[in-house]
Length: 145
Image (cartoon, rainbow, N blue to C red; front, side, top):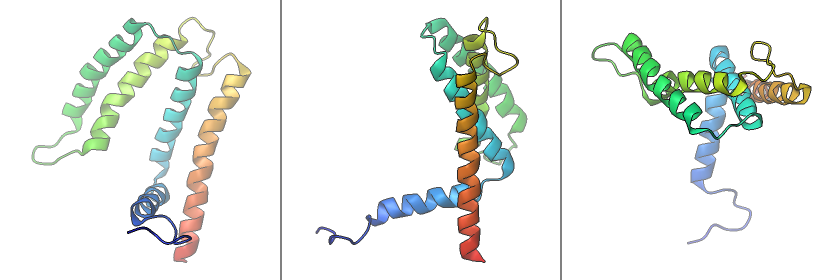
């Protein structure tokens, strides 16, 4: 059984797209900031990548120790935390540790790279996320109103 031409995407991709748009439309400002942090990290990690295993093993070890401590601090007996919040508890220390190692001795000021091009790329990545969130929210809220 095949879909007729022009019938649109199958239900699975439509459902996935609707779910993604719903997720973006419901993002509170704090989660939008977290997505910006991830975009910033990914730009810097890609531009200043170092394949040295010590960086990544240390980051994984710090992630395990600090992530577990954070998890112990936020869990409530009898109540689940959920996969994604738990994932963030472990991802954040991994990113912080590896970011710190990647930028050490490279002339960064706080988290700002010395190369204006890389700074612009990281800022543009964050700006794109904010623009997508604002755009999706305005479209979705426009449909509701």
